[in-house]
Amino acid sequence: MRIVKQGGHRLFERDLETTRVVTEMLLALEKNGMDAVRTYSERFDGWNPASFELTAYEIRAAIDSLEPQAVADTAWCQANVRAFARAQMATMLPLEVEIRPGVVLGHRHIPVNRVGSYIPGGRYPMFGSAQMSIIPARVAGVKSIIACTPPVKGRGFFPATINAIHSAGAERILVLGGVPAIALMAFGLGDVDAVDLLCGAGNKYVAEAKRQLFGRCGIDLLAGPTEILVIADDSADPALVACDLLGQAEHDPASGVCLICMSEGFASAALAEVQRQLAVLPTRDVASLSWRDNGIVMIAADAAEAVRLSDDYAPEHLELHVREASSFAANLTCYGSLFIGEETTVAYGDKAIGTNHILPTSRAARYTGGLWVGKFLKTCTWQRMTPQASREVGEVTERQCVRENMLAHAITAKVRVQRYK
Image 1 (tube, rainbow, N blue to C red):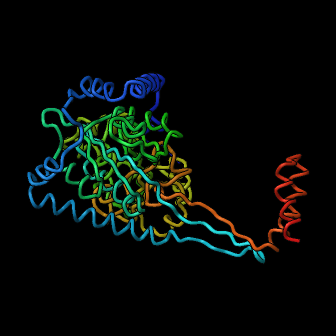
Image 2 (spheres, rainbow, N blue to C red):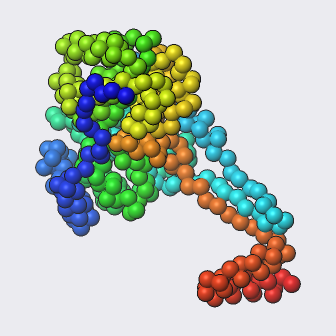
Image 3 (cartoon, rainbow, N blue to C red):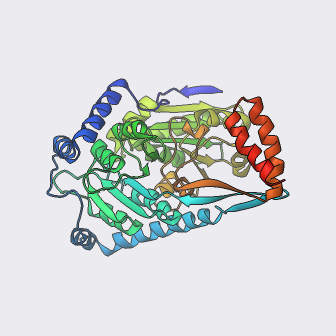
């Protein structure tokens, strides 16, 4: 392996100052409730409406303000997400098995009751994020879904975001951003019931709030700056590879951008293409910083080394621009979502194709996948026995409990052994 270009961006975006700020905010929000929500919303977003929640009339007016094509395109994208979530749900089967005579064990998948979804705004109005958290929750059978999205300065809210949230299936929509929104849903402030699980991407303050609230409620995952890694051999098109790398680089100056290729020639061609395309890219003010500070280009000796390097990076998004894509796909183990062949690209997964774009970053793909319908389900076990089986299990259980000096436990087994003789 040879490194042609070295960049940074491998650690989750967390620092002591962010932790301190979020801790202080959460303490104030829990103590002072909606008064603190209003104070922070006014301070950070200049937003303090009579009600943060949109009425049915305001939701309908927002949707009606959109061009029909915008509404139709969102419906098309959401239909894909819904179809894939339903297909995933169909794999989540209940279990019942008799492991020995009279001992029947099983599990069932139970949806959480209340979910809070955060749909980010920030640099871009990412209304497509609504479908990624709300639709899988709805397909899983979640009873109550509330959504928060930050205000748009000077406009109140972005109509396309409201349309996406509403059509995805949230019952309530609040225009509220950042830590106050996360706290409102987690603590249950005002007339909002506390949620069982928080989901959705956000900035480093939102991510830190979710981290600190984990345990108070569940969370989907902690997501830092976005990432893309492309594995390309000499059959790939350097211009297309460069295009896809820059497509993710525009997200944020901290975006992770990595290329693993197989030859000096391809590395040189790809680097030249990146510079050529950056010169005319509409979002080069952001993408150029990401590429400069975090762009990595490596040359692997062979396919096996390329796989090893990729798994070590453990990217959020992984594209394969190689001849033997199926072989790579079978051997790679650490990624958030895999895009096989030049025909597909990260933007398809982010916006339209149906897989989820809320994915692990900062090497978290080593131990978790992304958000999916199963995240909203609790797999809960159960057991049932015949009297004869209870006696057999009880005899062993009593002896094990005595060996552990857990004598009250032993008695619960012993009384059943005696009862079912």
